[in-house]
Amino acid sequence: MIGRLRGRVVSESADGTLVLDVGGVGYELLVPLGTLGRCVAEADGAVVLQVVTHVREDAITLFGFADERERAAFRLLTAVAGVGPRTAVSVLGVLPSGELAAAVARGDVRKLQSVPGVGKRIAERLALELKDKLTGLPGTAAAVRAATLAVPAVAAREPSDPLAAALLGMGFKPAEAERAATALADRAAEPLDVRVRDALKLLVR
Image (cartoon, helix red, strand yellow):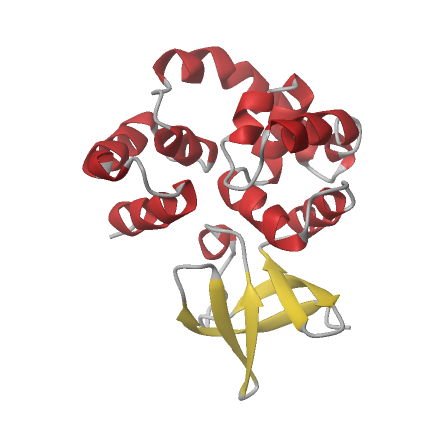
């Protein structure tokens, strides 16, 4: 099983798939949105990804994460009934581990439902089953405290558009989230994950 890879990113797709060149071998990984932004690039441009190797009868898929905390959160998510690895990646793309832990600690089912593919029943199950598990991850307790303290200020300014809410959850400032949501306002009927990817392209130019 592959547990860690270090190399240069040679391609990245809008669906979260990237190819990492490791000693001349290209490894294809599926990563949560924003993973490369959370990675620490080394002096030579290489990045290190923590990896989970998912094996099925018909496929072997590599899932990559910026740090050990996100990989541990992924494993906890996939242990919840009804949450597959791709849904778990989608969750961590909208709610990185610290934000996810804070949402679960507050029992914020609405926040969890903002993730594409997560309905009310799954959101309630996540809030119940992960409540005492995510806060035990390294460094997560501090993130939960910070996010919980910040809730009143953020909630007061959080727009009703799920896109803006998702961007806020990824760490963007309210003004940036509102700017992207306004730019994509005419695409409100499109899937949230598609709008999030296009919003990220606007914000990282």
